Image: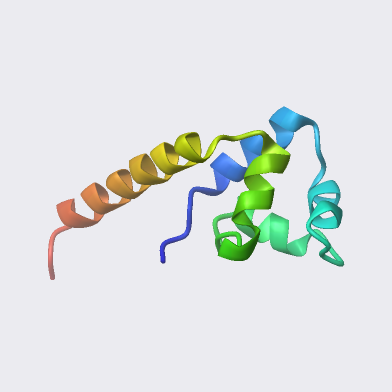
Length: 85
């Protein structure tokens, strides 16, 4: 699984006016570190929390899917354009 664009998650959170700690509490995490990791592109949110996260951020599943596909397309194009060594 690839890491989704961290800016997507950060912008979604900011649009709703939440802090990273607010999101952590809503997902029953003890700290905001995991949310920070998502937003820095270090990892993706766990699939088990994806539905809840989309609900918190008021993002439709279709919007998420379209953004995910666009991000993946961009990543793969960049990868395939790299010269092999």
